[in-house]
Length: 168
Image (cartoon, rainbow, N blue to C red; front, side, top):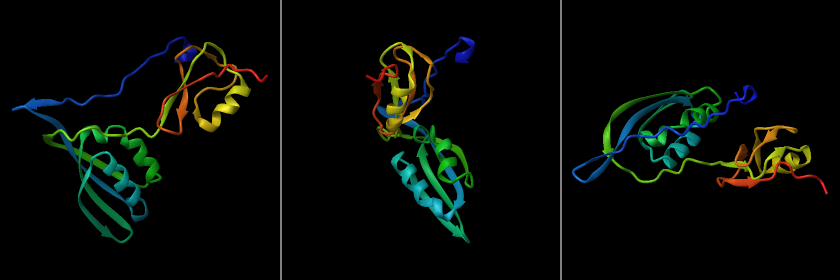
């Protein structure tokens, strides 16, 4: 849409947290995953970081069925990573099971944002140097403005960069 002259900024979805008898409660889901066995380790590790608790795991042939209980906040944004982790061979379904006690902060981001610190036209020399730091969303000769997100960083930290820097 940027080429058409429109640019939108959309925020992350937020889960409704409610309070009952002085206790914070959040929605939880039951997640059922069917996947080839070689991908189960990555799935268990990732959902564990997102506060998921494995309730059951059954193996049949080379397939594994894993059942997790996880806060909805931990599941948000995982579907794309799941497709990548299982190379498209996994099946995941979830259902809401109720509100349970709040589990605290969930660290999900493994990448940060690379934002431009200046306005102007991006240059190939500058982008060539920035590509080692992460994945770029723009190419050379793209008009950028201060604060524009131009890529992801491979580390979890946000980074301000100068995509217009010339070779001196």
